[in-house]
Amino acid sequence: MYDVLIIGAGIIGSAVARELSRYNLKIGVLEKELDVCVETTGRNTGVLHTGFTYKPGSLKAQCCVEGNAEFDKIAEELKIPFKRLGKVVVGFTDEDKQSLLKYQDIGRRNGVPGLRLIDKKELKDMAPDAGGEFAMYSPTSGILSPFIYNVALAENAKQNGVTFYFDTEVVGQSRNDNYYILKTTKGNFSTRWVVNCAGLHSSKISTMLGIPGYKLGFFKGEYYVLDKNAGRTLNMLIYPAPGPTGGFATHATPTVDGNVLIGPDSVQIDCLDNYENTKSSMDKLFSDGRKMFKNMKREYCIRNFSGIRPKLIDPETKDVLDFVIERRDTVPHVVNLVGIESPGLTCALPIARRVIKCIKEVETLYDRKNFNPCREEIICFANQSREVQQQLIEMNPDYGEIICRCETVTKAEILQAIHNPLGVNTMTAIKNRVRAMMGRCQGGYCQMRIAELMQEELHKKETEIMYGRKKSHMFTGKVR
Image 1: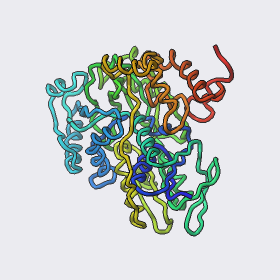
Image 2: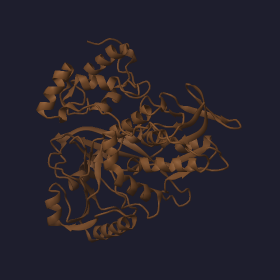
Image 3: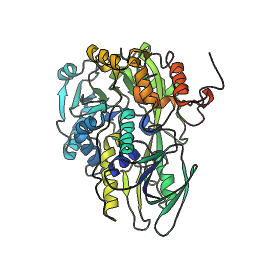
Image 4: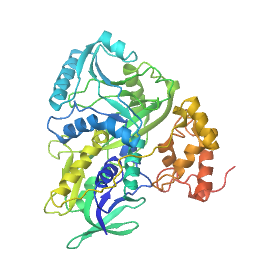
């Protein structure tokens, strides 16, 4: 019997788990995938947004501004790679200038600090790689690692007593007088409260819990990943002026690790497993990217990927609606979250606090006296000075053995990732925690060595090693 069960361990579910672990509650998280950060959270641009494109007074605007303002403290507590680089939203035409003035006004009404228009000279001084005749400058925009943020929230929640159940899909529910029974692929779980953080599947879970009627539209966005040589002079985010609906076309985003992401586009789809990259989308991304970013060159492309956003759609007007964070008296002890998409990464902790507010409307929550908001990181060997690297090797010789050459990831880091606090053991779990297999060769050198270490450390057969999702077997038998 749990006090609270959270459905979903993406960025929102993990944030809710972390914030609820501040209280004396027995909390569990049910996740259908083999790790956190597998679907929407693990397939986005990793931007800390400021809130100048969202309707004043909306939850998106409120939570985005709140989440942006607090993130320096959060990044320090949870040891999340984070840079507040700033953003230029560039324009070419008079229509673009009017668009920028419109969104500058919206940003000011939402409380976004420091927005201003700059001319071409100042734009080139700020961002030499940017195209455009003028721009709106947003100084508080930033970039972060969405992988590490999700992992950090979940690990901190686990550290404070939350239990995570992976490969555990919720398939039904029933309710007795005072509690729910959630039926899953791994058995039944009983709980007083249910929090729906199911992301792409949130409308389905909402209906299952007794709150029907939400219509999600699924929009796929495709990306190019450029290697670090392309990003050496990209010192801030470069976005095009928003279109009439407020959305952005293809943009260039540096990552905290030095790569560049070009994208995304946006195409509505029906299949939630449609993560393929298409030639038509990639060709258009390339041509659009060259207008925005002068180092968009074929030789710099090392990978493609795509993500899917669950937008809440008005069935009549087809407009995209605000986040839903609700508690209904007719469906007791359920907090329902639907349509959480961009800027969900920025909004995660403010959303979590609003979930707690819903629960506090019904019952009193008591603080956990030994709550610890801080998390220990896996030290990134490549980012240390020569002196610190030498000290690490002296303390642990495994720091002296490089497994991933492209990203300079050591055996010591790989072993820490394998023995992570959440207990997950896929190849992408290692990748998301220490960046192995994310470099120029995309695992061509290190992937087999990492698989071998996983076999040895976890006492697994080669046929039990999964790449990322269920049934993603790496091997059918022994290889050289």
